Image (cartoon, rainbow, N blue to C red; front, side, top):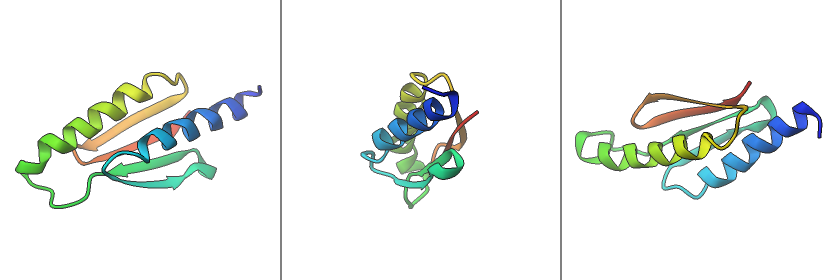
Length: 82
């Protein structure tokens, strides 16, 4: 498998996992990334739930050597391939 194909399969597999989370998952897989945002309200009472979602995403992303997980805050995450 070529490197580009491997990277695409990694980001696609992770996207599919994240699509089952209670979050807004927006795809831009053709450009090698997607975003995950826990929906509003963005307040302290929902921050724990949002952090749990983000912790799952971080754990899953560690399975893929070519994937970078960037967390803007507890509610927003960007995943992309290098």
